[in-house]
Length: 97
Length: 167
Image 1 (cartoon, chains in turn brown, red):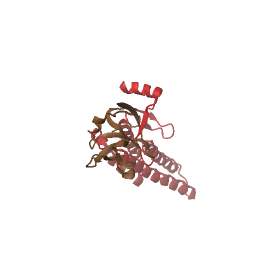
Image 2 (cartoon, chains in turn cyan, brown):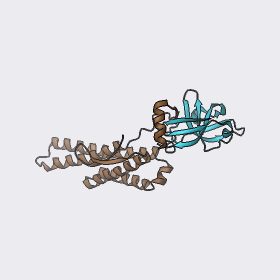
Image 3 (cartoon, one colour):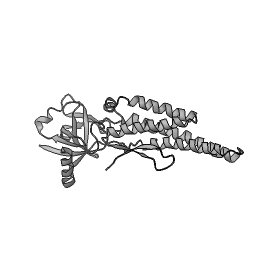
Image 4 (tube, one colour):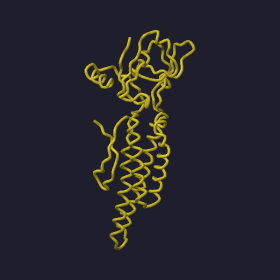
C-alpha cells in the first residue's frame, strides 16, 4: 500500500522542506528493508504523525531510534525509540516543493 | 509538474501531514531583520553627519543626540551580526554549504564589516555591510527555492535590499 503525505515543520531541513510531499510504502516486505539513513513516517502518542530519519535499529530489529537534523528537533532523544507497529511507512519518493 | 498536481490534489483531498516536529517554533528564519539592522547603521551615520554639519555650539543637546546615534549604530551593527550568526549556525546545513561554498567566507566578511562599522564612522563600510547581508539573503532564499528581487527600501536611506518573491 502507498500513502501520500505533506511535510510540515523544519527538523529535516534542508533534506525535506515544509510543503514537500512524500510517498510512503506500507508494504510489509519493504518494511523489512528499513535501514539507518532511511526516512520513515510514524505515529507518536502526544505528537501525532511525524517524519524522521532512522539513526539506528535495535539488534532484534524491533526498535528504531529516529532523529531530525535540526538541533531543536523533537525525536527519539525526547520520546525514546519507537516500535515497528508505530510505523506508517518508509519514504520511497520525495516530491520537492 | 508532479508537485503542482499533488498540490492541487492536496487542496481537494487534504493529505495527512507528516510533521518534522521541533520542540520550539524553529523554522522562523528571515534575514530581513539583519538587513534592516544594517540599513539602520547607515541611517545613524547619516544623522550623525547631518548633526555635525549644522555646526554651532556643541552643547549638551548636541552630545545627547550624537551619543544616541552612536549607541543605536552600535546596537544595530551587533544585531545584524547576531541575526546572521543564528541563521548560519542553526539553519545552514552541510548540503547548503556544498551548494554555496562561498557562504562561510561571506559570513566571516559580514562579521568583520559589522565590527568595522562599530569601530568607525566609515559610511562605505556600512554600505558594504548592507550589500554583504543582501548576498547572504539571496543565498538564504535560494536554499528554500524562493526567488528574490532587489528593490529600494521604502525609508531613508533608500538603499537596495533583497526581498523574497512570495506568491
